[in-house]
Image (tube, rainbow, N blue to C red; front, side, top):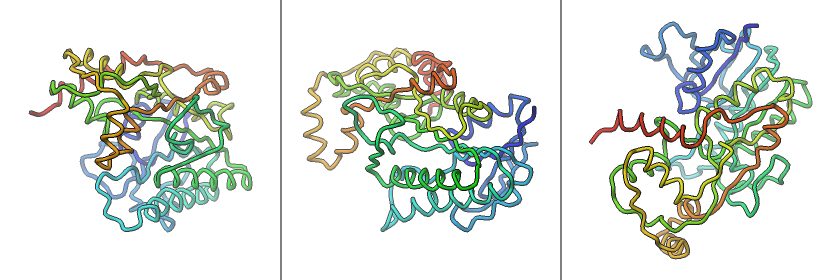
Length: 320
């Protein structure tokens, strides 16, 4: 059965990989919403120009004939924030834009809406692994906006009957990964000694291919309807162990200095980098038991296989 599907965020890190997977599978006929038409973007692919995402975006043409929406577009973490009110900007795109799309999806007869949220909805740090049933505790503007979008989507789903699937990933890594993961792989490749050889935390990560596989599973799995899922690789690592395995994948020695984590955290706080030190030294684990059991899903790629794939791409495309 062919699924007519609208994908938002198809030019992004996760959305682009998902689009590759959808195009390789004859069961799907994806339409990609883009801000503006890009001549070089995937010849032969059906794209629909929608402009910037907000509460007034017109999705009517993009939604014509669509039965499933995968909403991967979002205003994500901004490294150099220029807005005087970041939360307002996050809400404008991630809450108002998402709910406007969902309402128009209902009017167009969409049957299932898949929303890519964030583990930040649960919180930033764990004493025990997060589950889907934990009371949300978002701390940052991005996570707050994702949580508010979840609340609005659930209410709309109850009122209209449109099926809703929410997926909350932790840090996603893979070829061309942005943000902190990209900085780490560059640092390890450079051979510069890193003061991260004595961190005993536990972090859940998810390889890009594993996240994409779960999203595809949720497109038509009957048990996914009206559920929230956490996702990871199924193996948690300390920051130190991650860097060691990353070095192995790169074929480089792991030059890690055994600096105590408490000293790192104290120094980071003095420099105004507390959030970064929390990501490097704190624990954030997720329990994917529900995802495994309800969907019969297993992460197809191991951590080491995913790191090898990521490292191979990095080494092939790096610039000196």
